Amino acid sequence: MANFENDSNADNEWDDSWETIWNEFDWERYLDVEKDEIRRYQKYYSKLIRSQSRLDEVALFMGWENGNSTSDPQESVDTSLDAPPDVPYTLHKHPLFVASKALHQWLTEKWFQSISLCSDQIASTVALKVQNTIAQSDYYGLLAVTALDLGDYSLAIAYFKRGLVALNELLALLLEVEELNVDALSAYSKQAKIRLFDIREIWLRVTADCRAAAARGFEEE
Image (cartoon, rainbow, N blue to C red; front, side, top):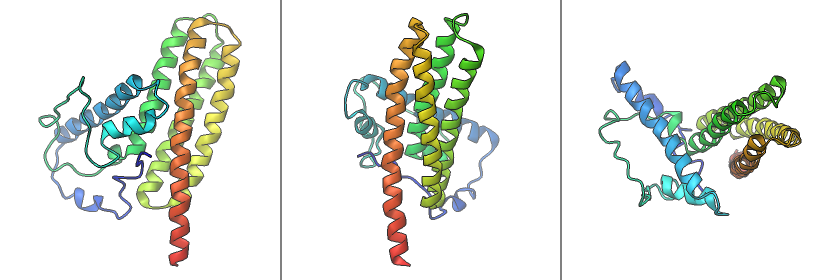
């Protein structure tokens, strides 16, 4: 199972990170590199999408299983010259943030592309509702990462539950979209469902880990 909780910062280690003197340009370079991490996840995911264990395999390539990145033989990216030295901790490094953001970003970008091909065949209200639901799911995923980073597992679970509600709403909307019998939208729905179920799988895995961690905390008290 992918370790979506590694690189978290529950002990507030990032307090020391702000002692690093970074200027605006340093942060710009850092954010560019972190954005590339999301794209890298998407590339691995696309290559492995036919695999039943794609989530764990992508995590392995990202270096989340054992802390060591496994290079894709078809892709080698040297970011040593891109990122500033003494990189501090931010939420962008959290595996859950990268995975959730990568999958949600695909949902958003491909939705825009799909509706642009058939804008006269789908009501603008439906198109907007789908987009808003994707954004809502993405939002709760980010809040859950923040709660995990603070070590508040119960709060993370609460956010995951709200995110799962948004995912279910999105699945229902996709069924409505499929009833329009528009090729571009049907193709999007087919691929989107794969990613929605994977987002749900990731969140359920982390929720189970959170419940276990919260239970240990109560026992220690």
